[in-house]
Image (cartoon, rainbow, N blue to C red):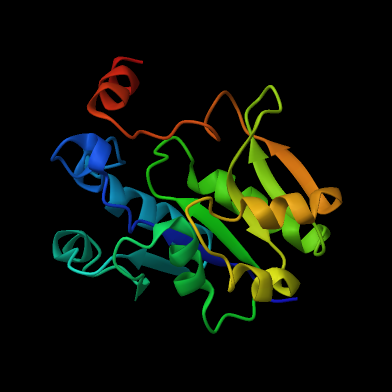
Length: 195
């Protein structure tokens, strides 16, 4: 079985940030605060080969990835999360671990855990969950589901694939609410920093 490819979704326009780009928000990193996208890409790279999905014209985000050994793929303009997944899985033959870039509490260790568990349970869909069992992200899909991921439409991501294959979904609890914390608004960021 091949090692999973990590797919970091970072193409969203972040309209709820009211003009700010959440991918450039500073977050704590080992050597001082760094932009969110850079931190998340580095975490992904520590866990495995990484593709980052950006949208067209996101040159500032692209610049944050300079010098990192990631493959950048481009999703169509304003096409939703499904289109990001479709662009990201194109040409892959490995399992894929889908990571949302706006979840700064997800660690490299969490990503390693999901990748390692996929070796033990190669047919399972591994979905990170909060400590109380609430399903969240990231989600690892076995390679046999790539054709279904490649035909997604709309802005619900891979929800329909998860529903269709519910018996194959195994929840992997992460500490606290790491699997649920995504930051979409300035208020979300303010509350997160206050914690």
